[in-house]
Amino acid sequence: MIKTVQTTPYTDQKMGTAGIRKKVTDVVRPNYIENFIQSLFDAIGGVKGQTFVIGGDGRFYNDIAIQKIIKIAAANGMKKLIIGQNGYMSTPASSNVLLKNHADGGLVLSASHNPGGEKGDFGIKYATKSGGQCSSQISDAIYAKSKEISSFKIEDAPDVNLKNIGMQKLGNMEIEIIDPIVDYVEMMQNIFDFEAIKKLFKSGFTMCFDAMNAVTGPYAIRIFEEILGAPKGSVKNFTPKPDFGGLHPDPNLIYAKELVDLMYSDHAPDFGAANDGDGDRNMILGRKFFVTPSDNLALLTDNYKLIPAYKNGIHGVAKSAATSTAVCRVAKALNVDCYEVPTGWKYFCNLMDSKRITFCGEESFGAGSSHIREKDGIWAVLFWLNILAVTGKTVEEVVRDFWKKYGRSYYLRFDFEGIDTTVADKLMADLETKLPTLKGKDFDGYKVSEAGAFIYHDPVDGSSTKNGLIAWFENGARIVYRLSGTGTNGATLRVYLEVFEKSNFDAEPKKMLERLAEVAFEIAEVKARTGKAKADVIT
Ligand code: G1P
Ligand code: ZN
Image (cartoon, rainbow, N blue to C red; front, side):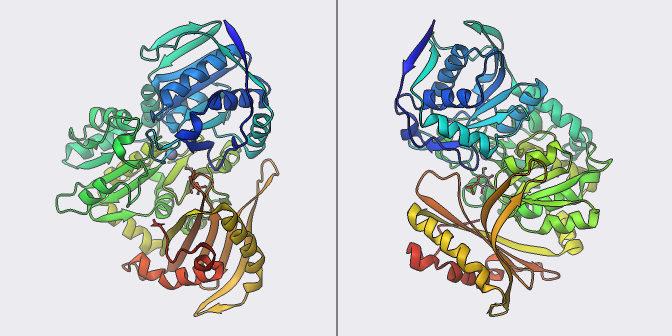
């Protein structure tokens, strides 16, 4: 039985860098999910006769929200939902299932790498039939609908059982519960040299994969331990938990502490990796060695010929503007195009659809390729295992060879969190006016060559997007400033710093970037405006 329920609008259902992301305490308000989903369906012209893919990272409220979505979809005439078993599906697996089934859309219930649990965050990412997250034009249309919604439709029925794989029905809507890992494994087997990796593990190679109590645990057990033969116990924290067992599932040197401590100890395995809450981010480590995400993208690109799926050639590459310029040097050497886009994976999708790029990535521990339309954490790990298996080198040797060939970009990101949004907006607006006036100014050897807003012109759909501000220096150094679009607590100012070195490869990044950091904070008047003398997080 279909019910029409009267509701009143919320004013905060605006998507950020990657979908809508809120505190759980906000999302549990009456009809919050219902309003958002009905607004989404209305904004895209209804979902009658359509097929959607649905899954989530298993965080708190995943189970409740998914039941609401199923019932609203049925009431709105959806033809079919393809749902991950127990309501779980990693973001990359979801993009794969969507593309493979030619579905019309997909919803991933996740706040990515943000903490979970009752006091954590919740979110929803919406993908269109291209397999990638919707454009800002679509998210603006959803936001507009959400501000005027007055009712939603919902099937009045008991909860659907998401445990058993197979078909069932709710009203006229078909529901197929799938094991998304099966399709994902098949895709990975078609990309990488699994036989070479199996031999590597047979030879005694060791690894530790930290799933951070999030969605990739079962994928990692199946792929690394069961199929590729990594020793049992190689995958840690593999049971998805609603609060991620208290972990902050962001795979970086700060939050993946257990893995980092192991990799810097004397009994470190040969290789270490972690993924985030929904499985699209990756961190790569060797013995006492960390691979920065910007280098990671560049280095994977440089080694593309070792991977069966790419060995016949790649299109171009792309990076977010905030990501270091390392991949641009590789693209130049390979004689392929290098695009620079705003932060957020959705900006890569047109470039992939139009075959302009094969690889893309961001400094925020994201890398991927045109096999799907999301970044892919396990893909990056398999890429590394494939490189190590074929070359017989260690992680550190691969990176050092790369630096020898291309030079090294020292790179760090400084985050100033929990700033009052009015203060942050004013800081950015004033900085945008100030930057162009600094051209030619010398800050102790850092002479500004170009400075201003970063504006991206999409070569495919002709749209323009402003995202952050950049200052270039004559010695190749760069500062990028932008405000986060994924936070749920005031504003976060991100300051990204890069200096380039042709031969000095063994310095501490913090030391190398010390002066540039002072220059960056001075230019933006960070302390005077925010009261913060230093960054809250440096990655
Ligand atoms: C952050 C990252 C960005 C990434 C996004 C989603 O967005 O910086 O690279 O695409 O999370 O994972 P931000 O908070 O900076 O807007
Ligand atoms: Zn994520």
